[in-house]
Length: 412
Image (tube, rainbow, N blue to C red; front, side, top):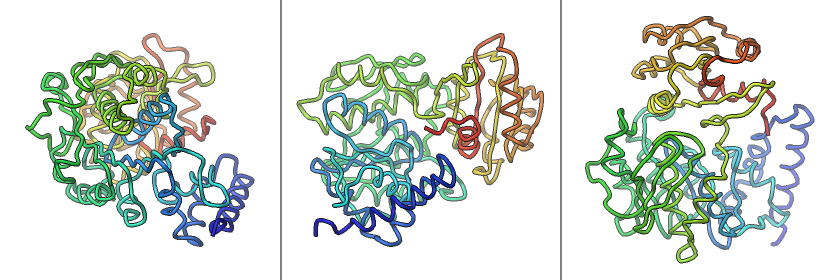
């Protein structure tokens, strides 16, 4: 039945067109939601159709960056890769991403797919697909309204890992990942003792294993955006898309997966060039120009990512905006984070502005203004003259990030 999925594809594209006519740049998940209802087998069938297989990237943090890194490396080696570049990682978002490229026969012209999957949705979908390789980044207490317990996340990732037919690439520094696949199936990556010791607050994982990896792909040094990573026993110098040891760990995961997928065709020089040319995923240490001002966007999604990213900020920044949105159900979740390095926040905004401002004040951060309306806050922040030190920096949670993108017209 070559045109089995033709009606579903046409319906999905019709819904997508209607959503975009109603709101430019909007409705990206709605087509997927509709198609999943009218053709529940569509997603799994298309995901299973790539001739070189499906690669799934999941975990609490680092999924988007690791996915983009892996795609860049594979593409640089000549592979035609389908991915979900908008970080649409839940079931309706994945289906919407497929609708962008799928033919009426339900097939996509690509060698393989590399898809970021949300932990919860990936677990729910795990009976619909088989993966060639699964890459797991880490386990953290993340989104406490959904993933309030590390063991709950571990169980979800275990269901995703069980779909892997060839290998499970795991962060060898995270003790909760070690039990999710047979040792013979695991490909481990991680950091050396020296790198871990050089990260003053560790790596933020729920449980860091004392069983440090001694071979395989491992980060041996990190300095800002530069890292040294050993692959196949030989060191390679890597330029990261953003600064910090957490980005070096993402790169190690992507390199470990690429090396396993490409086999003898893997070329560390090509891989290093691909990573150096890669731009950050939106908000993940991205620097861009808006209204004539250079701005760095820093996304914080849980206490670990908040701490690691704030620790990498330049000291004495002159202009910082901090925004906490409705995705943070309980702002006390972030109180363990020492945000004092921010020093001074010109504006604090978002629906939870008062709560994050209180935390900052208790930690000795100067707060010039609290403005709950994020649009007003962004306009006021961009209207400030050029900073005396550093560049304008916006630290935001996921909801505030999405609203910032929409307000500033950064929807591509």
